[in-house]
Image (cartoon, helix red, strand yellow):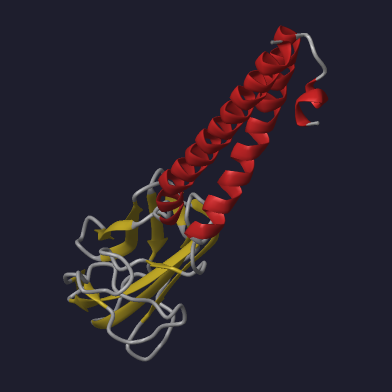
Length: 217
């Protein structure tokens, strides 16, 4: 009778162990599937570009507004006229989600090109570019830049841009592949499940009053 009870308890323990492992693996896969897309979409986006003016209506600075506060390292904003001459008026400044690039005032009439590169709040660099015209000291609307710049930038406003809706481009490479994220999460889930299984085996052994190794012999 005792032998029958012992075998039945061993079978029950194995079924419980298998269920625990299956649940742990399922939980790991679910977590990986949930967090992997989030990591891929975490980069900040350029959401607006404006040209600040002086009281006299002359263009004085470019104001780039992002979806989050970018890091104050690695920022590069280039502005050049039609001849390629530098048209910036100093280093960029930061105010909350805005990055402000002073311009060399007054700007001569003509077409200007800007290429920007900043470090997103998640640590990944993003970049973009645009053009604008100056007429009588005042700026016209901002347009997408159709050629290559030093940053190989695309438009910050072109809805057909290949990278993102606002034209900002992630230059950090591809995100972590989903299979790799799932595998890592599964390993974590197994690591969490093992102590639970050991504790369950000990509890079952204590209840039956025998050595847990005996059920495997």
